[in-house]
Image 1 (cartoon, rainbow, N blue to C red):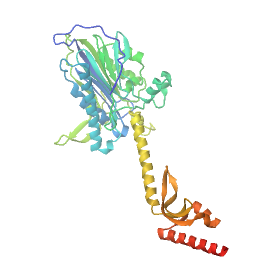
Image 2: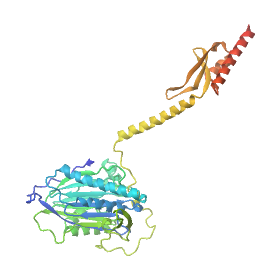
Image 3: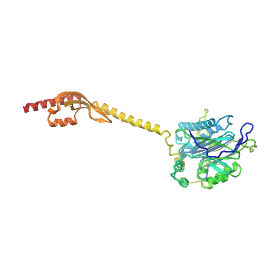
Image 4: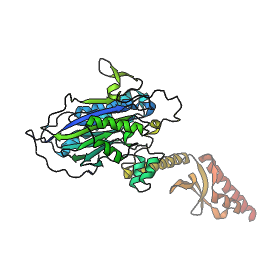
Length: 444
C-alpha cells in the first residue's frame, strides 16, 4: 500500500447539515466504444457515494471481463459510510474493495485459463459527505476542478511516468514515446497489489472527473479544464467523450463527472446510480451456484448512443498490432529488492552446495596413489579441490619412500597414479615396491 500526496489546495470550511455531512454529489457517467475498437473494455460507475473508472487491459485476453468484474465488486462501496469513520477507516474500506476486485479477477483466471493475462486499471473515489478517499492503480485518472483551476489528483503508474519522474524525458517527449501506453500496475489477481491510497478534502463548487486514458491520452489538461468549467455533469461528460474522439482517440472513452454541492440542495430529477461500458453491457449467464459459465461479447459493446457511430468497419489487419495486447507488458519493479537479492543468493549457494555434494559422492568411488609425508600413499577421491573443499583423503600409507623410487615414478606420483578400485591401487603400490627392490638389488 502506498500513500500519495494530495496535490489539491485546502478548501474553505463549509457548514455541516443536520446529519453532519455538508455535501452531496450530482453525477453523470458515459462510456463509448470509440471509432476503432469493436468492443468496449472500459467500465465506469457513478453513484451518490462512489465514483470509479476501470480500463480493461489484455486485448484478446478479455480486458472487458477484468474491468466489469472490478466495477461490479467496487460498486458495493456505494453505501453511505457510517458516521464517525476516520481517514484510516475510509482508506481501509477502499483498499479492501480493491483487493477483493483483484482476487475476484484471479478466481476468474483460475476458472478459465484462456483469460490469463487479463487485467484492469482502477481509479475509485469513496465520498463520505465531506471528502473523497481515492484508490488508484494504473493510468486511468482522477481530476479536480476548483475555482477554475484543474488538478490531476492521481499519479500514473506507467513506464513513461517513471521516466518523467526521473527527469529522463520531457513532457513533450512523453506524448510521443513508443511505450507511453505501458502500465506498471493493474488489478490482475496474480501479482502483489499496492494501490495508491489517499484523502482529498472537498469544497462546495468542486467538480470531480474520473476518466480512462482514452480521454486524458488525447485531450490536454487546459482543454479538459475548459470543458469541465461548463454545463452540468452530464453535459461535461458527453462533451469530453466527443472531444476525445474528435482529437483522434483510438481507444474506448469513459468519463465520470460529479459536482460537489451543498447537502441541502434539491437533487436533480431522476438522479440514480449509473453503470456504463463493459460492466453495463456484458451479459452474464450463471449456473445455479452463481458461477459464471459464459460471457456474451456483443458488437460495439458499450456504445452509449450519445455519439454518432462510425459508418464503416475498420478492416481486419488495418491495425498491425493491438496496443492492448502489450499494454501490461512491463512488470512492476521489485517491491522488496533486498529480500529478492537474498533469495537469489541462497538459491545460488544451494546450487553450488548440491554440485559440491554430488562431486564429493562421486569422488569417494575414485582411487589414486600419491605422496604424503614422503611415503607412497593410497588416496580415496580425486587429486583436486572444489570451492575450497578437498575431494580426496589419505586411505592407506605404505612404508615405501618416494625418494627411493626412480625419477619416472616420482613424477607420476606428483600428478597421482589413478586406479579403478582399492585392490588395483594396492597392487600398484606392491608393484612399485617390487620394482624398487629389484632396482636396489641390481644396483648393489
